[in-house]
Image 1 (cartoon, one colour):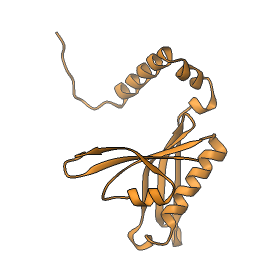
Image 2: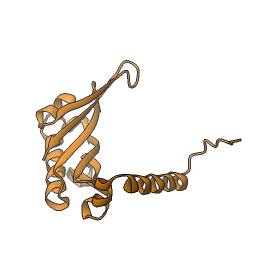
Image 3: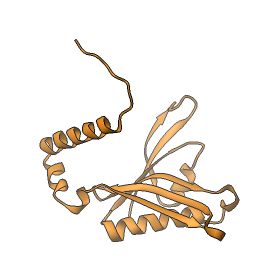
Amino acid sequence: MWRFDAVVSKEREEWLGERLESDNTAASVAMAALRRTPAGQELPLQLYALGGQGVVAGGITGRTWGRWLHVELLWVDAGQRGRGLGAQLLRRAEDLARRERGCAHARVETWDFQAPGFYRRQGYAVVGEVAGCPPGVTEYLLAKKL
């Protein structure tokens, strides 16, 4: 008999992540080899563009792992859009990931109403899509060789 607990727990989430990482490492020669390199260490990446008086005009967040940059968030203030700031943030994050962390690729998820065209103009290609996620929206996975 099982009792199910739907309480959100950062500690349990970390514990699950550790268990999954251990199992994946044991099951895959490639994962085991990666874990023994600096690229096997997941590191956060954050870059912010500051305007006058230190106000954030835009930013990009993500993480690097396995020689990949995973872009999680990219935002530019509405008053700054169309000036190339998003492209500069993305390019600087990619350069940092490539030069300082040895990343060879980048990936990002975006919805059809957000920025798939923007990422394509930056050299990304659609490698996957999920229609109806959420209903009425298509989510795209895009990737790029750095």
